[in-house]
Image (cartoon, rainbow, N blue to C red):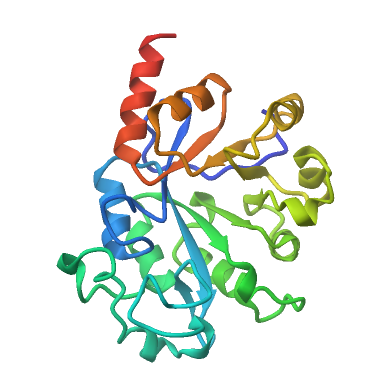
Length: 266
């Protein structure tokens, strides 16, 4: 791996050679992108938590995946039309199981307060919140919060929106940033070309996109790469054989077991 690529330091290293990343927390067992899911991820031995960030109407970074609230909360319509106070009144757990009724949508600040000193984060900045203007936008706000909580060395930012990647590297060239492979925006360029152009440190892509050609390109350039979202043991083993840097999974406990079994067979 080239020295030019920066990756976050792990608080918890399973020494498995492949990073165990809890996708939206341990979301196979808990409502995604909630404190319950993030705490579960830590308990199940994840090395990093992946989460999604949008902006409330009053400009607060909140943790939620979809632009619209239906499906994963009791709200209706666009999240961006709700103030933080209004979002906090919504139920973000009952959709998953009635036992999680009353679980709230967390702010990024709440997650950072929990994660600091405990677990590394992959903060995905959602395209819906990104603007052309760098100053005062979601990227700058997230970056400030990460630094306030002393998490600068333990966070990997990522985005499908290449403007966000550019904003991040302009605001702080030393902050680890992964380019989320966007087929439309890539214009058929290989991930290595994109990583070079946008001065990114890693490439995240789906296991469906991770074909032989892209794998060779990433490996030949020594670019760290993280593959999502994998919950099946056989697919996990194939990715381990391919030498990926990390795997996003809804089942971090399962991935840990597979990694340990795989290591014994090497």
